[in-house]
Length: 610
Picture 1 (cartoon, one colour):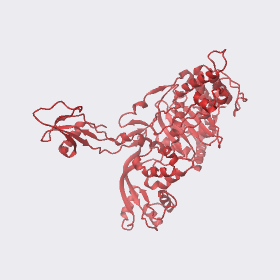
Picture 2 (cartoon, one colour):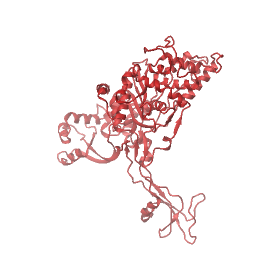
Picture 3 (cartoon, helix red, strand yellow):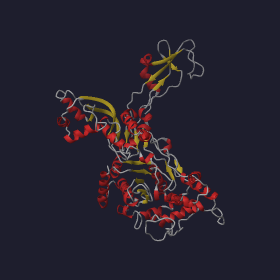
Picture 4 (cartoon, rainbow, N blue to C red):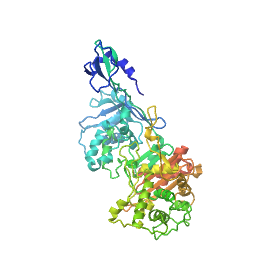
């Protein structure tokens, strides 16, 4: 909420002389703003009065107004530097078990071989702090301090919530030592950093004209209005976020869910997951060290900063562009010709686009993309180098309108743009301008040179759900008592007509039905029709990656989800189940008994890899 300059003046006029930081001569200088000239018979002094910002930093709340981050008193217990320390007695004092006490101390050490007596601080609750105060005489070597810090009330949402830079210096110093070459990729301040100015607020500056008795006579320049720290109301659903994180756990990958109608991000998971307080809590140095040294790189914000080949889910975009360019129609059929490319699904003939999507037939989409790249405006003309270059450039222009190969402008730091190849890229990579479709056909199945981020994947699903438009995905739905930043209310339209995007939906629904690649992930038993597309990304260095995009309900979408699990195998068996359970949890509030065993198995797998 903004305070008026008049209110400040009433508060500060009594102590004006103490706050004056710069007073000048009565005559205004050329080029300076000034109020209407005062009575010339009286000399006035121009003063500059700084009104300090005394407001607390704003809170961070979820979409249901649950406080996730706030500035509160934090109690820190400094352990004696000289061993030995009776950890059993300390645990009894604090109400901790012996195992928990040793683990808490180990988590606070920056490395396992830290010397005895290394400074250790433990974060305590208010009740635990009161116990220490009550027994201070018995523990004279324990030092208890209280200070105001940012406190996280949830363990979930670490990559979205982020941290205050001032409170994360220990982590940043550790990161610069451990990962010097990749330090930039580890810095992710989340909304705490992105909206730092609004959370903090700022002071004001007054410009009064004073007479010799220190009485005010107007102003000589416009005043700067003070702004208090604003609360951020996130679009995240804290309970849905925690649930989605329980499905990902220690696995590498991401899960992003958003409301396609508004672009509001409902959950934002980067795996492996970790607690939101880890990067700022004084007693988490040891945990941070393990995260920094992990080869899985859990500190990288995967949905925003890592771009990967999307796999077969990209067939949706290729089909939409082919329909728009007239390269196919919804009734176009192609044979499953495996001399062109292998097909892992046994299915009936691909008589139309719906069947091609339902069974994710690779040869079908090979021929779809070939029609785009090798087609000629004049049916009597032959395929030429110039035509291939022009058609690829046109394909890329339409695909980019989906927000790909560019930064979406999401309110998280360091968003990656992804990549779509250009004709010039292939000229250089192939060392010839005479490349043919056969040398770039991997584009047809979303592999090769195509790279998308998780945010772009979820937004791609939202575009199809909306039949051709999107609002930039964002994490903050309102700042203070207002709405989101203006750019998060604007609609962006693709170059593909709504009818051509609507033509994809029957095939996406068929994917989730009997015979489809994700038939086991159907939510028909709870009355939800899901539209989705599975994908399996080939990986020459290990197990394949599993992907899925989809939205529900199919004809009135309220949630769009993208899942990417590294080295998890097939999208149908690994990624799709996670996506549909998040949909069911959001739309119904709980998981049906039919899928409880499925849910338990996924959670166990997530913990095993944690």
